[in-house]
Length: 105
Length: 477
Image (cartoon, rainbow over all chains, first blue to last red; front, top):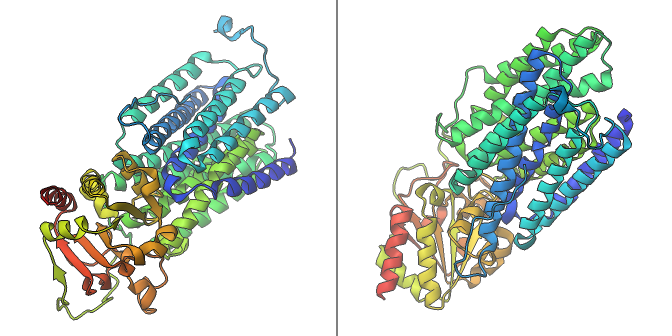
C-alpha cells in the first residue's frame, strides 16, 4: 500500500470517527472509553506478526509480551463494557440479573 | 513445531487481497459497534459486534501464510485473555478510571514494543529501511512509550499508590522541553541513517519518551484526571494508527484512528466542562493554592444549617427533586444510600431526577456508571444542558459532594477564576439542600456563593451517613 493511500484511509477514518463518536451521549462515555480501549487491543495483530515471523530470541520475548498486552486490553475491555452496559439496560425486568458473559478475545 | 505450523486451512497471502478484505470486514464491525453505542439498548449489542470484529482480525492474522511460533502465540493469547477476563469480572465500578488508565497504558506499551521489534527486524535485514516505514515506527515508539508511562502514573494516582496532589519537579518545563528536543534530534538521526540505524539510540528514545510521560502526568492533580485519561486514550489510539502505517495494516490504521478520535473528542469535552484549555491542564500545575480567591476575610458568612429531619421534610413534601451528585459522592460511596432516598421519595409520588455534570466523576461519564450500578434508571440520568432549563420548576435540588460545578459565580461574577465554566444551575431551583462536610472551598479554591443564598440549606455531614439518615427520616413521616 502506498503512503498516500494510507494517509487517505487515515483522514477518512478520522472524519468517520469524529462523526460517529460525537453522537454518543455523555451518559455513556465511560463504556465508550472502555470499548475503544478494547478496540485498541487490535495492536496485538502487530505482536502476532512479530512473533509469527520472528527468528531471534529478543523478538520472541518482545512480541509475546505485546500479544499478551493486546489480549489483556481487548478481553478486559469488551467484557467490562458488557458488564457496565448491562447495568444501564437492566431496568425493565424487576430483579433477574446474570452477569452477561460475552466478550471475545 | 513444524507439524503444528502445517495447518491445512486456507492460508492468506500477507498483504494480499483476501487478507485485506477480511481486515476491512473487521474495521467495519468496529465502526458499527461504536455507532450502536449511542443508546444503552443498542450499545450492548454494538459491543458484541466490535468483539466479533476483533475475532475476525485476529483469526485473519493467524491465517497469514508463513506465520509460525504457535507455542509463543498461544502463550501470549492465553495469558493475556486469562488476565483480562479475570480482571473484568473482579473490577469494581468505582475503580473504572484506574482500570481504563491501566489498559490504556498496556495498549501503548504493546505499540512501543512492536515498534522496537520492527526496528530490530529492519536492522537485522541489513538493508535501508524506507522512511515511510521508519517514520511511523518512530512515531509509534515515542507516543506508545509516553502513553505507557503516563498512564501508569495516572493509574498509580487514581489507585492512591502515589499522592493525587500535583507533584511538582523543579525546573519541570525546562526538563520536558529538553527531553522533547532530544527525542526529536535522536529520531532525526535514526531517520538520516536509515541504511544502518543505531539500536542504542532507539532504546534511548524509548527511555526518554518514558521519562517524558512520567514527568508530564506527575504534576497533574486528581481533579484533572478526566482530561488526562482522555488525552492518553487519544495518544494510544494514534500510536496504534502509526503502527498500522508501519505494518501496512488497514485494520490497525482505522481502529487506531477511531480510538484516537474518541480520545480527542472526550479530551475537548472534558476541558470545556472544566473551563480550561488542554495546555493549561498539562502545564499549569493547578491546585497549588490559587492565592486568595473569594472573600478572603476569613469571616464565616451567614448561612442556614439544617439536620437530616428538616431535609427529609423538605424533600418529602416536594413534587420534583433533582439530585446533583459530585465527586464527593463517589469518594463517600454514597450512591446506594442516595438511591434509597430516591426510592422513599418515589414511593411518596415525588419525581426524582439526577443532574450529571460532565466532570462529575474521575473520568468521562463515570458518575452515570456509578448510579447505574445503584439501579438508577437511565431515563433519570439527565445531562446538564437538558436539566438546566427545568431548574426553576424544581422544588428541591440536593447537592451531594459537588461544589464548583454548582457555583453561580461562574455565571454572575466575570472576575471569578471559574467565570464561564458551565454549571448546573441549582441556584434557580426553589430550594437547595447542600450535603457537605463543611463550608470549605472546592477544587478551584474559591468560596461557593450558593452556600449563602437565602434558599440554600446546608446539611453538614458525611454524604453516605446523611443520605441514610434522610431515608430513615422520610420513612418515619
